[in-house]
Length: 440
Image (cartoon, rainbow, N blue to C red; front, side, top):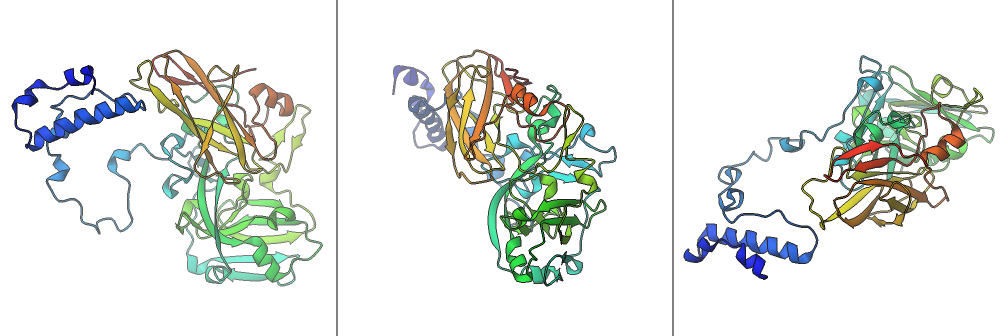
């Protein structure tokens, strides 16, 4: 122990007996702080030997807690009351039936979004369906058209996969400038979960798909009857019909009891409350794929049918909701975030501390899976100087997350969908974080 550590000891402890509970915890605080400092991981907050949070018995430790069966379905701690989805009038129809509920990315750990925090997009409110009355009709260019109950659907062999779902409008809130100074409303139209269900190909192999079938229509049973056209290649690839999410039944806002899952493709294609799959020779050009979910070009024409979500990344710490507080010059601090791609697996992530002038490849951590969130991390030594921190991701299909100017050059500025430019945070010398646009 250094002289500085020794000098920080409360000398009054020396005159007291060491076998008291209070003295034991006082020593524990001092030795723990010294160990952290020597480990050179984080500079600990300077603690006093008479800190009542350590030396006194906590109130929750001197009385019985809740009965084990008080909450048959577990709930979060009341101290986590800010860890919630949020909606905004700018993203709603005005009556909150057609809206998007944004996921709090800044509060999430790992790559699995809890069911209660998974972002939700509805076009006509949340439908509540009696599973005993649920039916899925599969017809059109199939040899054995049929109607399945939920129990019959679940008799097919199931599997569980981890995939993200992202609204194609994710990021549109900041496309023309920093309208929102927080992460949740900038990139919160996405989440990642483990899904359980049956591969659509397994069902189609059973029913017999006719050779002339080139397109599939997926239709929901909610008020809006959301319907989208899907090419047969995707239906026979990794498409799933799912009834489980993170080990339990789907939530109503996620399409209970059954939804379609198209890994890596636009969130609206993952039709919720699925009631019908029809197979045909031609696409349907439904309302949602003509009046919406298209990309308007400078020549006045729109791009239709561009389904996969592009390679993307976002720094989640620091961010406006999670600034760097109480940092001292020389402290080590972690920059962390999420990268994802609907075209495959994240291969690398770069971080820049100066707005894109210089880049450093950083570490990927945890699971690295195709069409799923991938965590990245970078440790820096805080120099108490203002920084512009940005990230860019590269996937194994060879795509690189573009700058704002590069994206404008390729697809113009009019459309709000499939906007995956590099997003920047200004970190001030005091640790405050703001959303900024980085032009190059």
